[in-house]
Structures are given as structure tokens and as C-alpha cells.
Image (cartoon, rainbow, N blue to C red; front, side, top):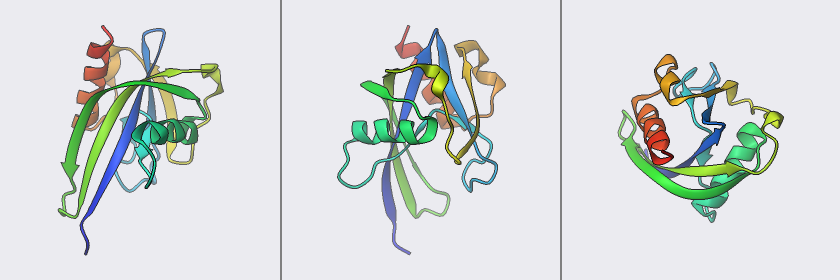
Length: 138
């Protein structure tokens, strides 16, 4: 099998000191029912910022403005065939945040404070990314 490399992007969206997190659907094959921040894969020819705006719209129905990257992580799948590099960005919502509509990839969403992070099921890397985001905004 060919080895695959992909680039992902994620959005740190804050409202009144709380972060938007989304719960992966239980039928997802990777990290089902784990929480994460919205994001997805950069398509061929897209810039990471363009991909992030598109992915946030697809996953949450929100329009956002990309401010700046604040973190990256990289991992190789357990079978050694897929390498992912993910870039996390601070973004600002540019519309009413009451209009959230989730895609089929997610079952739920909520807004959390820094102190509530341990109350949710995150991958270790996602938890670290979220903690860095809160630190970046202090």
C-alpha cells in the first residue's frame, strides 16, 4: 500500500471565554465519540487558511476569519501508512454563533472553559492543542 501524507487544520473558536468543541459521531472510524475542535483536511490547491474556513463552515455552519496559527502537531498512523500534519489556528467568528448546525461527522457540540477541559474525552494531542490555545489567548 502507498504511504499517504495529509495536512489538516483546526479552529480554536472562542465566545465569551469559552471554546467551541464538537463530538465526533459514534459511527466515525477514527476517535469515535471523542471531542475535538472543528477542522479537517486541506484539499489539493487550497491554502491552509482557505481549507479551515471551508471546513468550519461544513462542520458547524459558521463563517470565521482566520487570525493566526498557534500550534502544530504531527503523527503517523499505527500501521505506519499515513502521516498527518495538523495546524491549529486562532479564528474569530464573523456571524451569530447561535446558527450552529453540525455535519453528519459530529453528534454534539458545546462551549467549554479552560477549567472544564478534563471533563471531556479528547485525544492526548487534542487536549494539548486546546490547552495551548487557552494559553495563547491569555
